[in-house]
Image (tube, rainbow, N blue to C red; front, side):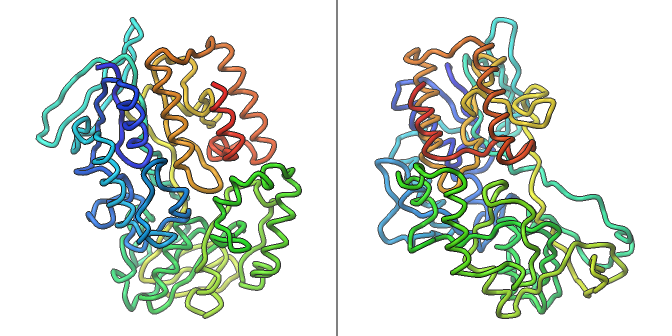
Length: 428
């Protein structure tokens, strides 16, 4: 076959649709028992970066695929089971299910001397297969390998459970317990809010302040704002001023909630989107605490000298980008940044592409659809890539520019501004 597509979540299904629409012969390998990615895993009881309280943070109108909107009966921010059902129905509508091999794990992807790709996979029956392809598209996501801090002093004495968000499923599993949640990202605030309805006490340990935004400003979903022409016409400083004024009116200072103020300007790091966490803090259901300093038996001691008894600690400290089946150094380069031309193409590995390896403010769907259409054009010969040296220069220029706003980190290298990025893809 011409193309091996890895992953059948939101990004993979968008790619499958684009390839099928372009008349491209392909197979999609999905390790789970059905399509839907992280959205189907909580209900299926599978381990992964999803939990039973998981909802969309982006509005359904912009998260649904073009030409196949989410049902009108869905709320603005559907729960995971509704998103999973929608993705399954999209796969049926797009006619791509016959191309998808579920229960199939990719073991390795290697490039041969002639430029072709060999993909080794194991199916649900344990049968190993080795197949050759002209192109490989990776749409498997990157939130699979948990990132954990160094164990604090006294960890060997702690009598409770230590979990990562990857292992968290439902607040009911911790009913009546005292639980410490570590972090202030999306999973941390979701899990803390969920726990606060079941646990006896819920603490939120925060080392570094982040900007916390509601899902809507001035009655508009954030992803609608991000696509508006009046927003994209603003400079970065004007965008910051616009949002900061709204936040001042809506919630005031984060210090008023017992949270540390961010040490960086708005949009100089990923933001946390939540309608709940500040309300749960205001109601006393979640108690903010500083960083964990050490553990002592059944107690967690914080940096301010206070302590709390804990039955469990849930580390919501993110994930490391991990593609264990790919050649070393791809797509994460030696400096820890994702190095892809237009955030899609591996410049020095012809025939290897990535879909969904971007982090926008707002919905990712339009971005992965645009990426998928471009890849389909490349595969069919309707689009031609520049020479590797030209692609490497574009990558360096992009990383240099994004580092000026977000710093030089792995996460920063996948940040994109929605409308400018879509325009950029439209030019290739």
